[in-house]
Length: 345
Image (cartoon, rainbow, N blue to C red; front, side, top):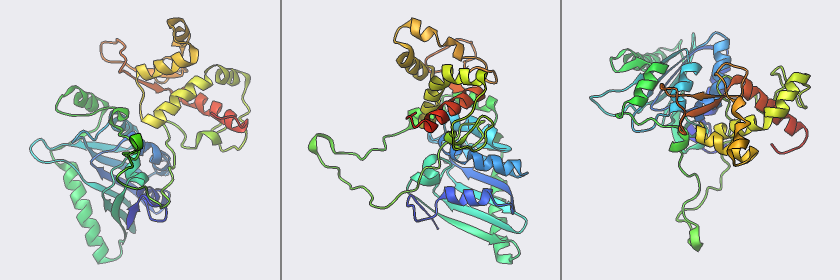
C-alpha cells in the first residue's frame, strides 16, 4: 500500500526512487491527470539517471479542470522521451493516476490518487496500491497485459496529441483551456482559522510527515546545490574557483540565487517578480535596476537570465523569466560558498 503523507508509510516518491534506480527496469510510463514542475523537479534526477542508463521514459497527461500548469507542460517536454496530452472534447475529465516501470522479468505498477506533483509524490494525503509483478507467473502477466492494453488504448486514441512547444502555445492561446503558472495556482498551506483569537476547527497531525527530497531545476545536474563543486561533483567544502568564475560569482551569485530560490519555491517567475527582487537588491529607482539589464540574454547564452517573450517581441510584466544553465550554475556556486562559510544564503 502507498499511504501518504506519513513518514513511516510508503510514498509514491519512494517507489519511483527505488524503481528508477534499479537496473532491472528499462521503461517508465506515467499516465496522470496533471504533471507539474513542482513534482517533476523532485524526480528529475531519477528520470535523468534512468534515461542515461538507456531507459525510456514516457508520459501521458491531461489539461482538464485547471490543473495543468505552464511550467509542467514545458518541463515534461524535456524530461521524457515520449510525451502526449489527452483531452476528450466530447466526454469527461481525464483523471487517471497510473505509474508503470517495466523490465524483462518484473514490473512495478502504482495505481492510486497521486498526480505527478509535489503533493502527489509525498506531501498530500494520498492512497494507492503498488504491485510488484513477476512476469514468469501467468496471473501477474494477465494483470500486466490489462494495464498495458489500457495505456496503449489511451496513447493511440484520437484524443491524444504529441506534446510539443507548439501545442503548449496553442493551448495557452485557446480560452477553452485553463492553464496557468504554478505560482497562481498555489493555495495556502496554513491551518485555517486561528485569527482574532478564534481557534481552528481542526487540529494538526501529531505524526511525522515525509521529507521533501528537494526540487531540481530543468537542465541541472540533479545534485543539491550545496554539494556541488565547479565540476558538478560532490564536495563538502567551498568550491575552489578560477579567477574568472570567482568574479562572476561575486558579481552575479546573489541575484542569481535569489531568482533560483523564488523559482524553486513558486515553480515559476514573471518579469514583475524579477523586477521586485532586483529593485530590493539594487535600489527602488530605475537607475538601480538599469544596472541589471546585462543579466538577460538568450536561453543558451553565458548570461544569467532569459525571458520568454511573446510573439510580438515586446516585454510585459507577466512574461516568464528563467535562469539560464549558466545562471543556475552561478547560483549554486554562490550558495555553496555561503554554506561552506557558515553564512545563511
